Image (tube, rainbow, N blue to C red; front, side):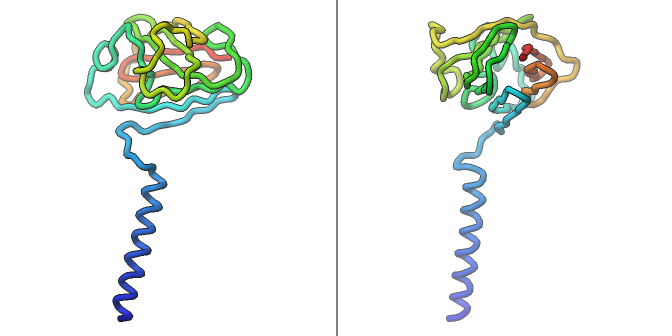
Length: 170
């Protein structure tokens, strides 16, 4: 009887441990991990897909079409106070980041509709776009395996495959 009680207790403790680990990881396993980058006035939360041997821009991500700029939920950019983004003023708040990648330049879009998954519900009429700016697309010498957003020295830098895009942020 004591052995049965001990085994039951061990099983319950093991189940509790597995349940805690499952809840810590979240209810779903994502193919693309999510990350948050912060620098001064700006916080960005986004999904980080992998290249996995695919052609990215002009392939997986078509040129001249709206892209969610990451994986899963659309990327969110938060400004704690009013700022200048891509040479244009932007009010403090949280926005959804979309891009339209091109071969030589990208259109960067900050949109007021939050909670979008991908670009599927992106307003094609663009009535919810708060800011649009265009920046050059630069060729990277070495390919970047995982989509990455960084905030170095007053810039929002996006890198993936052999493309780097930089947007001034002040």
